[in-house]
Image (cartoon, rainbow, N blue to C red; front, side):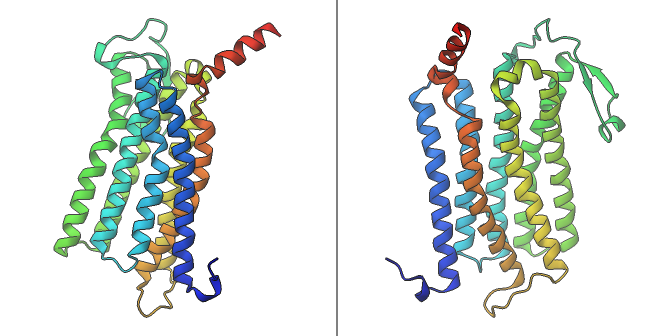
Length: 295
C-alpha cells in the first residue's frame, strides 16, 4: 500500500489523474470492444468509435500536459491543438453518423421526396445572413454540411498559425483573444448546423437517441472550452494566484484545467455507454421490440 502522507500534493495530483485516465480508458475500451464484436454497420460504427474515443483522447492529452506543468507556451498550445483538431474530426463524424441514420448520401445529390420542402427555421444572428425560413433541398442540406465542415478547416489552420506565432515571439494577448473569438464563432456555427439538421430530421432520428449523443459531443466541447475561458478570467482578475516559486500563474491555470478535464472525462465516458450503446447492432433492440409487440 502507498502511504499518501509521504507524498507531496503534486504527486497525489498526478496519481489521481492517472486513476482518472485509466477509468476513462476502461469505460471507453469496454464500449469499443462491444462495437467491434457486433460489427454490423461499418459506416455508422466507424463514426461511433471515433466519437467515443474523444473522452480518453482528451484525458490522455490533459495528463501529458499535467506531467510537464512547467512546459512552454508552444507546448501547451500544441496539446490544445491536438485536442481541438480531434474535436473537429468528431463533429464531422457526428454529422456523417446522422446522415447515415437518415440514409442520405450527399455524393449522390439526391434528396428523397419525403424530405424535400421541409422547413428550416433560423434564429438571430443567422437571420442576418440567410432567410428566417428556408426549405429543404440539396443546396440547403449542402449548406448545413458546409457550416459543419468549415470548423474542420479553420481549427487546424488557426492551430498552426497560433503555434508558429508563439514560437516566433509575436503572439500578444490581444491576438490570442482574436483567435479565441474566431474559433468560438466557428465551433458555434458547426454545432448550430447540427442542431438544425436534428430539427429537420427529428422524426427519423428519434429511434437513435440523437439528443443524448449530441449532448455527449457538445458537452465535452463546450464544457472544456468555457471552463478554460473561466479559468483565464479568474487568472486575469487575480483570483487564481501561484504560491509556488517554480510555477507561474499561467502554468497553474493550465494544470488546473488539465486536472479538471481528467476528472470530467470519466463522467463523459460513462454517459457514452448509454448514448452509444451497442444494443442496436447486437440484436437486443429488435428482440425487445418483438417482445413488446407480443405483449
